[in-house]
Image 1 (cartoon, helix red, strand yellow):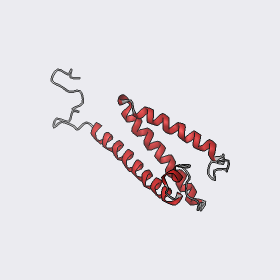
Image 2 (spheres, rainbow, N blue to C red):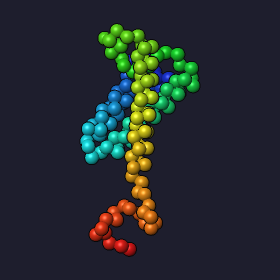
Image 3 (cartoon, helix red, strand yellow):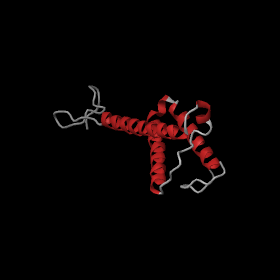
Image 4 (cartoon, rainbow, N blue to C red):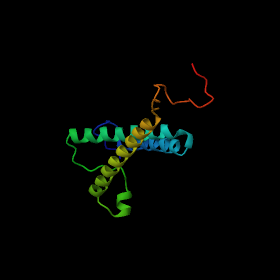
Length: 130
């Protein structure tokens, strides 16, 4: 854990601590129902950061598997390469899921125009006309 991260240039120990705190904060945001949109944005942001990090590793031709699970791979008796491939799959899931749901929220929040050209947003029967 004292080895320097090839992208951030800080020891893996501190990088894992920093990323772990960010993940916990985002998880806490996601448990609050009223912050659903912030949760989606946060997950999309974090997964995008992971994607940029992975692209950086690919760019510098980093051949070692990501040790982002720490010693858990030893406990689960899976190879670091298998864990790395699973994390890549999880990254794709997080990216597609968060951006897909954000797109869906964006599309559903658009208010369609009524036949007379006015917006249907807030235009109930008792709504004042301008």
